[in-house]
Image (cartoon, rainbow over all chains, first blue to last red):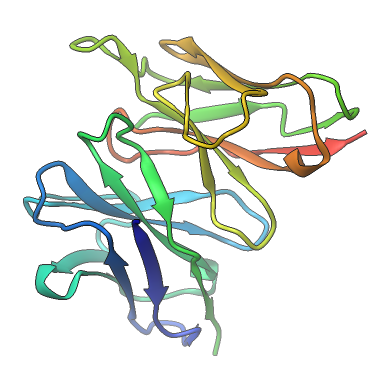
Length: 122
Length: 113
């Protein structure tokens, strides 16, 4: 069974750097085709794709946020970390991580973690 | 970047009636090498993460009731709920995973009339 869980601060101040960790089980990021993505959702708004990290360490970012985002992995700990610099109140959102396997016949994001709400406020 | 546009933004349907949600992409999502459309549909209920309903435009995920179906190809897609149940009240999103950024539609809120 694949599970993912996001962790990190619930409150950050404007201009600070946010660091979120996705701890997963039930799969390995060493397996060909596997990736972990981050998606966020401001309160009452739509989903926004942020970043994707592949098993071979290839990384893809949202063009609008690319200069603020970094995604990394610690395969030994089954963790993926997302950092976002220069946080702003508009970055207040629930942040989700999700599993993706290019070779599982689906190729889309399934399953997702429960999400973690991050509020940006002074 | 591929832009995903859903219609309508909200929809009210009577119990037992059909609900139809549309999704249009700014570029084709059909992968020529395997003739598959890289389009997924998710259901999101309040306080919950999105749940995968349909992948590759028309394949129902395990455990999803057969009243949910997906259709379409290229740039135009549809999610249909054949007979609306009370538990189907949710926001529905389409997502393309043809190329990064893997963009989502703006969502369609489905309610009971």
